[in-house]
Length: 175
Image (tube, rainbow, N blue to C red; front, side, top):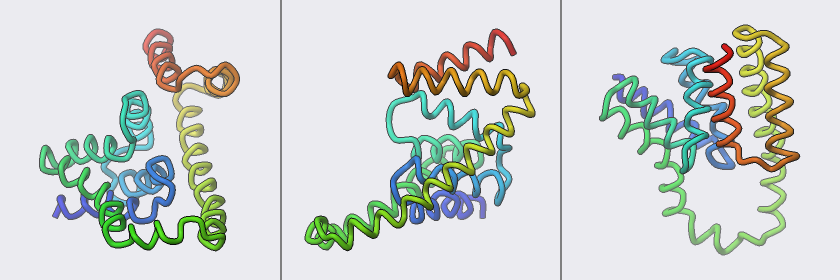
């Protein structure tokens, strides 16, 4: 039964996560933290931070790690397969149709209607992480890390992996 749950936990976000891995992160978090309670928000945020600091797409890394934690090596394989299966199936079945209509104004407008929903999902996940950070380290350090991360990534164009590594080092020394 656990393997079926692992499959569903990553297949459903793979189907609904329009926009790729970052768009499916809030959906994965909902399944892993709220629905199945395999992790806390804090644990999920740590796995997400670690996964973001490594190369390759985030969704399969999350699925592989969480699947392994819950169901061992087979759980990891099932999680990764469940993550890529929706895209694989759709590419096989709908590939020709998408190529034919990719420049259609209707298709382009359709994607514009989905973007606000993805933005809200990411915003809710962000707020959840901020709240969890506040509870763990307080508002002052949370605000400093948020502002410093913003300036490093957006203003000074430092790669996010270095910012995440810096936050890990800061946490290791000062927290």
